[in-house]
Image 1: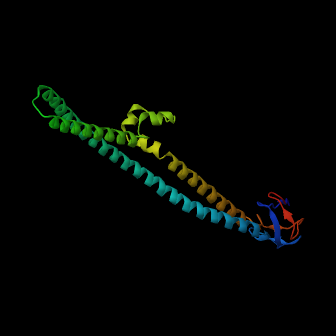
Image 2: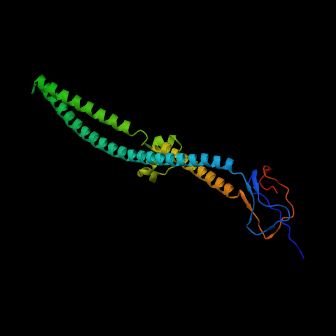
Image 3: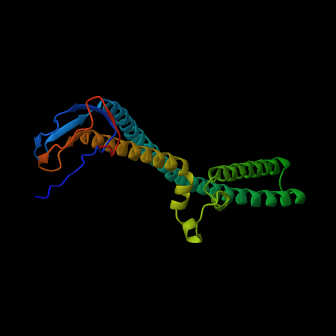
Length: 231
């Protein structure tokens, strides 16, 4: 009668903790043959579980930081629009006082008004000009990172249509927070993969018989070191 010989191999590396069979024993399929010490794996698993928990918390914070950064950019857009309105009002006021100043200057030359009236008009004109310049400077400051030249300097790929949308500027101004979020997400995935791998290795520490049969030979003993794929 033809008999099938099967070598039993380990799927992990480690020290044999206990062997439950000896040569000549009858074994059944899925019977426990030997067990590999999992203490080093369990210690490593605890480290990975700790890393996983830390990465999970870090990702949550990074996501919150990213969302907050995006919200802040939305607020910046509102602030820019507000400053544009104020600058427009200041410009309108400047034009009005400039017209008054020019008219008063002509009247002064004609002797139709006093120097005091002219000086008052001049003061109003200067004040309105200063107000307008401040408003313009505030717009220029608030537009830092919100101009086409800013994203062009960074080599960001965009279209003219993109410039009409807020998204391209939100992406540009939150790129650091986005990178941090992506990094912590990848760290979490790596930690999760490590946990799953170690759990699988611990599961494979119990070597079972693949078939019903007889133990023909046993070339390992408890305490021996066995490599992955070793017999």
